[in-house]
Image (cartoon, rainbow over all chains, first blue to last red; front, side, top):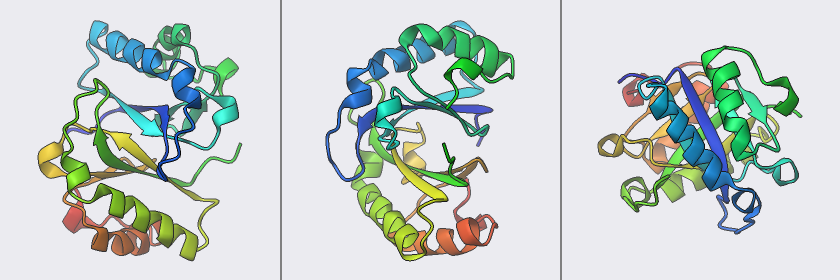
Length: 102
Length: 102
């Protein structure tokens, strides 16, 4: 199989133990995921970049959380408007968006 | 923040677009997640290894899927009984479990 060059994980706040915290979800995680999918499609990066929704990262107070692997870069307080910058600087530019990094 | 040394992602099959495929889920993903959490606790690796449930990886026919980052190693057809081997060989031993790798 072809592995993604970048795998973007977005907490959409369901928890492994079933506890519905709902924090990242209420903080627009679904819109963030939608924006990533749209940017990836518009930039024709579907073969290289994969987006997954995930359960809770136990950093709810810093949410919404976006994690980029294999770089192991964690972003907090991400807004739907930040997605374009993460795509430009990190995914296409190879640099961490320092103002969002936690 | 302290980032995990290993981040284990287990598809529990909800999809970003909301389509309930349910394949990995029906293939015991919940039990796999439970076994990982138990092994991590028993081995006192909670500070180094983090487990997340995720949405669909679009590899349903190879499910259940387990992905280990930052190594970008993808395992398919994982059973709850395989969790101990992944913990022994990969997470603690640093070697890929070749028989499960996809």
